[in-house]
Image (cartoon, rainbow, N blue to C red; front, side, top):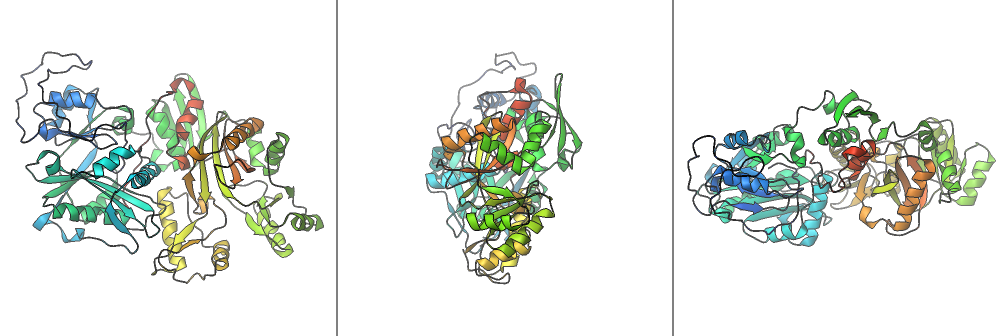
Amino acid sequence: MNETLATGTARTDRERVLGRRRERIGPGGDPVAPATAPEPRREPAGPSDVVLDCGWGRLVFGQTFHEQVAVAHVLRSEAAGARDICIYLRDPHVLVSRLPDELFIDPSLTYRLPLGERRPEATGRMEIPGLVVRPLRDADDADAVNRIYARNGMVTAPVEVLVDNAGTDRFLHLVAEASTGEIVGTITGVDHVAVFGDRENGASLWCLTVDFNTAPPGTGQALLTELADRLDERGRAFVDLSVLAENSGAIRLYERLGFHRTGTLCVKRKNPINERLFLPATPAGYDELNPYAKIVADEAMRRGIRVEVTDAHWGELRLTNGGRTIVTRESLSELTSAVAMSRCDDKRVTRRILTEAGLSVPRGRTATGDADDLAFLTDVGPVVVKPARGEQGNGITVGVRTAEALATAVELARRFCPDVLIEELRAGEDLRVIVIDHEVVAAAVRRPAQITGDGVHDVTALIERQSRRRAAATGGESRIPVDEMTREVVAEAGHRMDDVLPEGRVLAVRRTANLHTGGTIHDVTAELHPTIATACVAASRALDIPVTGLDLLVPAPDQPEHVFIEANERPGLANHEPQPTAERFVDLLFPGTRAPQRLWSPAGPGGVA
């Protein structure tokens, strides 16, 4: 159900029975006399007032409640940062009409898959070479699930709650494990019979999501069909799920597998996590924004800041709160001066400023096209050649070792900028650090695009498939080009483009880790060495820039050694979830809206592979 769900603080994993009678509750929490005749009392079968902790929030089983007022009590006790969901409540619109300032009807559709003899043939178990779907077993599995949640804009769940839940018959928490041993997908089923003795003999499905960077195509469907098989083996009659009405891709899959619509509605509380579900319609042009502008718009709208899309293609927004208006282009705003922007724009100027500030950069020189270039190559060894001005990895050649290769690389770089920088090649991990308002907010290691063999498809087909998945995961921002560099990297690894890679064989297909050419990003904020963090803050102050993405080469992010490669005045904030990059950016723009202890994290579209 709701493919991405926010999670809150851990609570005891058991149904809570709230059996005492309650008075009707007014908006302020005080008892009030009913305005109409008392609602009829219903006697549910089995346990009453059942509330199940799922880690990301609680499932409130409305059909087990005697009175709607009891549901209101439960939803009002929702923990900060959690998303509670009440499902199967009789006449949910009546409860919402009584508390319109607190509750709303979730704009989702509920689908049901019949099991047993009525189960559609299309939902038979689906097998993918090298992929194993199995139960979540331990804390390592739960940590991996949390990483997938985070990559899909979902708030992570307490590890102990996930592990404890998976150990009970109330939950069927499954994970998809790739041939590399990496967890690449997850799904949670709830057995209603085990929870409260459901007379309808049903079950429900929650938190279906995959890692779009690593999961093979069909992983979501494999998880879903495996869950259906296991519930079928338990003798359940059906499994329900709830999906946002706008998630057309997931809906097409469910309908193709034989799910059918039901009239079941969900009730949720009007909390910060759910704001995008009940606030007025998004501004014109919002759907055309790229992920880097959209994450800023989402955070601004969540705070009640007026958002106007002034140029969707350019990612430009006009944000207004009270008497303050600021224009942004993704993470670039009017608070970044033209001087600071120019310091980042020319890599030679960046190097000079950082060097004068006592910070470490690789040795380098501006290409002159004469013997001095070759002398520098002879002195320092392999070099990187890149345009002095440019972005997205255009015109960069890594690992130049000969005079001929140097001339070719300089000529390529000059197609993008007449001034070319030659820089010694330093080994290490490609580290991006986001600094906002001179504070480190996020750090991530970026790795070049790679493919994993399946024993069936050749290198070209695997690259094309991985490129499609990277494009889908980034709103079209990341693709793997099949160009001369890609062919060279594949050849250097001893392969041809028409080779069929053995199952599980991992092959890097690009030299640089640029996200626009298919690179992937892995959060290391918690591991960042204090020496590197201090140096990054010093760099942002030397450049006098309020928002920057600093690129470094490091042996490892938890070690102090480092060199700065460049500074970016418009870093992609959407690449660093679950770190609060957009929150800190909007804090900078509108300090009056800052909430120091904010527990909210945006929930993205999620979905299935």
